[in-house]
Image 1: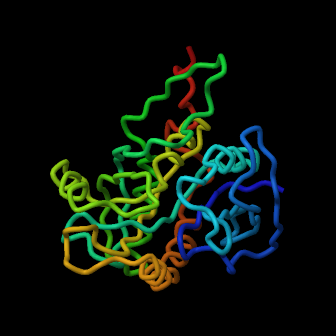
Image 2: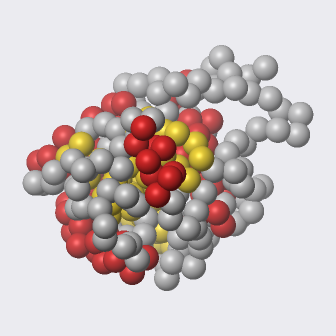
Length: 262
């Protein structure tokens, strides 16, 4: 059984009960084990593969995620587009908790992660100036507006290593760079999806303000609570997006390796 669309669930989004004709699929990959079993099912007439990024029970930290195995598994399952949901902190007063952002740029502040399928004698350099699929980003943002979310259709996502949250000095630095949100997961997914020629788009759920934006202290428990508050809206958005995604891909994501191999 294959799937057309992949969904990655972030903190607080560990399950998609709406899927029918469900089947669990555990995969082995050349890069190790994915975060957990993929749940395959049908939603709005589309075949979907769902993967909780941190596994059920949130047992994996961002730096422990096997990004290569996760994306490779989606490729094996036939997925052509991935929508990834994740919790983020806001670096801007106007990106408020419970808002949904659809970032179109990244800044990499990680240092301990595998972010390419290539190496060991195989060399390729994919274009990454525009790191997400614009067509998928615009479609999901429009669906978010239809379900009543407060939407930011673009923005720059700082991907930090974690698991600690950023210092005050770091937050101030990222703000001075013009960044909008900060998280710990999406950049490696975007890079690997591009190498796998899979469309990729992120739903960034603002759960809190980063250090220095407000005086309120952040706790990990509060991040999960905020994600739970928006989970229903995100599920509505995903269902709407499934109905809107055409069967024909009208972007260049499926040709990312055409001129990348050395």
